[in-house]
Amino acid sequence: MSDRPLPARRAFLIGLPVLLVSGCAVLGPMPDPPRVSIAAMDFVEAGILEQRFKMKLRVQNPSTAELAVSGADVRVELNGKLFITGLGHDAVTIPALGTATFDIDAFSTLSGIVRQLNALTQGERKSLSYRMRGVLFIGTSQRRVAFEDAGEVDWPAAAQAG
Image (cartoon, rainbow, N blue to C red; front, side, top):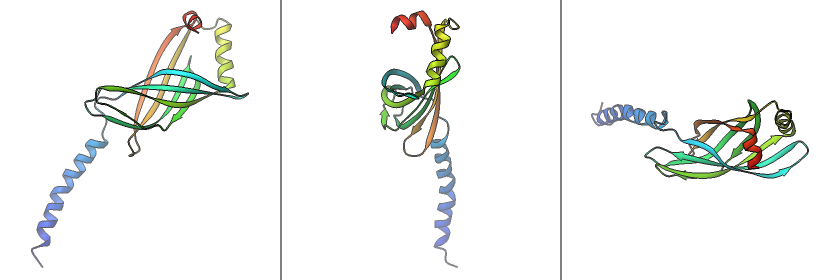
């Protein structure tokens, strides 16, 4: 047996744990997860069964490292009922301790809109509660970071704003 392969094996055995630990650090949870909110929503078109919106998401990156986002999957509930679903594949890099926006194609159904309008016009609701849940796709690694945002708006104020 030659002595030459032994140092190579030894280097491999020493280097393997280092690679595994650094790989786990990259794949582990983010210490400062991004904050995601709806910055704007524009009506695009209406069909009989489906409505289309362009939703602009704002991503705030509280981390000291930039964040490369390659897409998003979003669901928005109004008053506890699914209202809009959306997907986006725009790539955007959010600078460290910075913010950026990107667009999502979003869709609602006729039944979702009718259900919300009935509740509001019949006085069943005095406010609109919303919850946005979704996933940001990070880089090209298929890594996902979940996010959630929720709040409530008084219905008279929401109606006057429109």
